[in-house]
Each structure stands twice: as C-alpha cells, then as structure tokens.
Image (cartoon, rainbow, N blue to C red; front, side, top):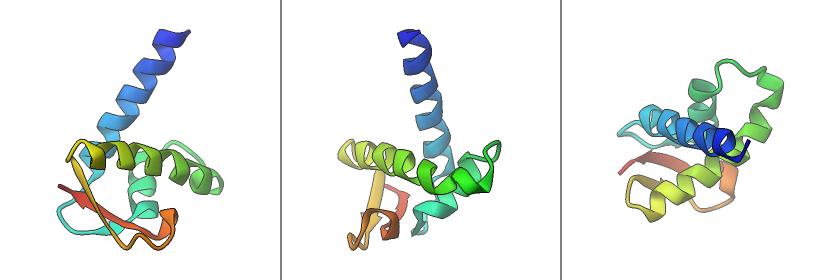
Amino acid sequence: KLREYLSHRQQREEQIVAALRPEEEPVMDIVRRVYTDVPAVLHAAAAHSVTAHLRKLEAEGRASRTGRVAPLDDRWSAA
C-alpha cells in the first residue's frame, strides 16, 4: 500500500511539473489543469496538495514563486 501511495505522489508531481508554465499563474490554474478528473468542488482541497508539491519543487529549483501573500494567492511558474 505504501508503494502505491508513493507511486501516486510521484505521478502527481510529474503532472504538476508538466502543468507549470513559463509565465506566473495562481495555484488554482494549475489545479484545474492537473485535477481534470476531480469535481471542481474539491479543487480548493487539491490546491493545498499542489501547493505542497510546488514548495518542494521550489526548494529543488524546479518551480518559482512570487507573491508570498497567502499560500493559495502565490503565483507559480516553471523555474
């Protein structure tokens, strides 16, 4: 079960990396592109997961953030 979870997290991270664009955009725009199979009512919850992935990617130099007002208001782009 743990391997399944880790595999799913890795797949989601790959989707998020693929969804990043050169121009900055709000996390909810990324969520809408990544979570196409999830009802929109759940996108706010998904935004927290995407934000966690983006922070990891930022630490690795793979994503860039501006704003830093509130986590869901930050704007993200590919690094």
